[in-house]
Each structure stands twice: as structure tokens, then as C-alpha cells.
Image (cartoon, rainbow, N blue to C red; front, side, top):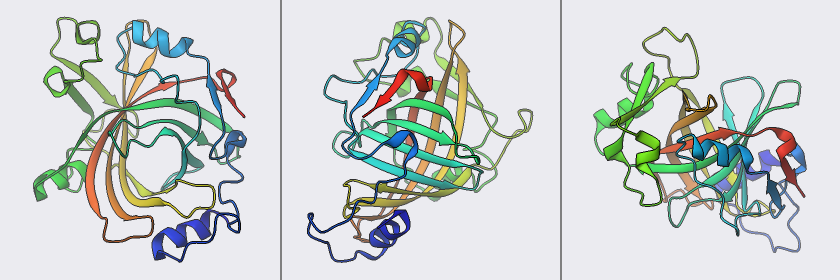
Length: 258
């Protein structure tokens, strides 16, 4: 069973197979990754980013295995994958590697990403803004992250913000001078076990923003509105939220997946 079959399973809620009979669905992934693979990350780029004021959270000692994988089907060339070290389902603290595979099948970008915050758009106006449907909001030329938005005691806000009350990120897509660019749209299919029996499907509105850290490196702010269509094939578990995720580029030679 492959990605298409897993997609259909999660869409239709098909009857589960016994684990010893179910074929794997997590094959043919970039870098040879599979659910259960052990991930080694040379942390020097992450430590350097933290010292330069990044909001990235370092991986915990027990976050060394891929616990879920997903494929993002966006309207762009190539393929985008996420290898989750923590799905954040319990504490909203996702951690994952985001892998971009170009149209030639080569891995051209890897980011280590950690969830910063999640908000629930409660009104129609907020939902329009976070999906870019109103021609503004997600997709604007810049986004300012204010100090008041963050209350995580693990963050050194003095190091991150200094005397400033906000961090300015600039859109990393489309014409840099355009006041608004429509966000990327598509779907994410996440597999939480190797046989594809558990996971979720969701619709996505996605836009990357970027700022330069004090040391010259880049920190990305990935803002994604996610409309959950089903969880483990159950369509009654629907919802909408907006995730703010911090990403730091990591060179491929600093990643080992076994």
C-alpha cells in the first residue's frame, strides 16, 4: 500500500488491518526515512541560531525517532515532506524536519522546525484573514511577531527581542514588493504508523516568512492555517487552527537518518 492508498484510507475510514498483515506505506521517502527511523542532527547550526536570538527550540534527548511522516501536496513543483519527532497532539509542541525535494527528485532544502504557538480563528473575518481569502492577512508582505504574543517561560525574550517589542518577518514567496501574494494551498496527509492505519488529513493555507538573525543566518516563520478533515479516518473530528512554526535551515550532511 502506498501514499495514495493511505490517503484513501484516511479519507474513507476503511477497516483496519491487523498489524502483521498490513503492508508499509512509508516507503520511498527522501533520505531513506521511515517511521521509527533514528535521526541524528548535528546541533551546531541550531545552537548558533539560539545564540543569535532565534526562537527555535532545541530537540530533547528523547526526540530522536521519527514518530510520523507526512506529505504536503501544494501547488508547486517538487515535493514537501515532514518527518515528525513530536506530533504535538498532546501539548501543541510539534517538532519536525521539513524536507523539500525538487522536481528532479533531489533534496534541496532541509529545515528543523518547532512549533511556537497555535491560535484558533473564531470569527469569519479571522478565518478570511488567516486564509488570505479577503486579499490581506496571510500573504501580506510582512508579519510582525510581538513580544506580548509569547509567554513560553523557556524562551529568553531579552536575548530574542532586546529593546524591541516586535520581530519583523518578510514574506519569502512571490514578488517581494507586492503588498499581497495568495498563500500556497493544498493538503497534508500524515501517517502515524507504518501501515497507514492512523493519521490525519487536513487542508492547508501556507506562507513562509523570514528574518535575518544577528549573526547573519536566516530564521523562518512558517504560518499555516490547517483545516482538519479527518483523524484516523473519522470525519467527525474536524476543526481549524493556525500554527506558527519556527524553522532553521540545516545542511544535509548534518542529518543522519538510520
